[in-house]
Length: 303
Image 1 (tube, rainbow, N blue to C red):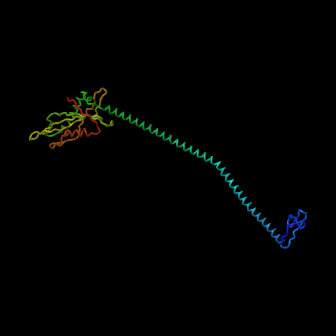
Image 2 (image 1 turned 90 degrees about the vertical axis):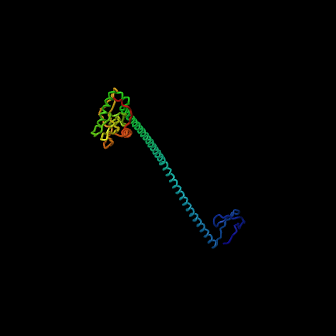
Image 3 (image 1 turned 135 degrees about the horizontal axis):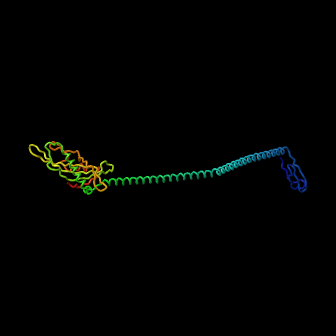
């Protein structure tokens, strides 16, 4: 391809390309056409083909960009749809969840309040039951004490009733004689029984079958006669009266059915004698050792 001057051959003015291969001179209004040889045609063809390929590449690149843009648009749409759905779900579910949580919270608070009220009622009932039980126990204790008080007798009360004293002494002496009036060979009283003291026993339990017991203790002098003479021995024994109580007029009543103090006997000179050889042993065994009764000691007037 040859390079040609772009000046007008007529006026040497500048040439302007009107279209491919056509030139125009503005000074002299002359028009010219390019004279292409074979190389120029080949170049022109390559140029056209290059332009076509360029356009095709531009179109392909534009298509890729369009596809990318469309993909981005589709992605944005999906994101928007997901966001809208999520927003809708939140709008629909969040209030429901809130309402549900509030309902559950209210239900829990209601249950807690009901349980608290139930516990308070239970405590009140238990307290009421406890107070009722204590009241019943107090009433029973008062009845028991009143009942026991009705059984209580004083030494003054016992000894102030002369009729009771006289008959009690007689009954006790009769019982004492019965205790010792066995067929003891060569054993005799050398004098009447010597009165020592009396005890009045009151049961600690109001349900005890025998509430009041009068015990009188005596000193008995025994003589043992044999071929060598007479030996003297002392035995301590007693008798009791049961079911002693006070009448409304203050007098003392009793069934006057005496009983022996104990079934204890002492072996003396190959003979069992009713009673104890030691006074202190009798008191420990028959009075102090009786844990079911309270007692007081007094002196019973003698006939």
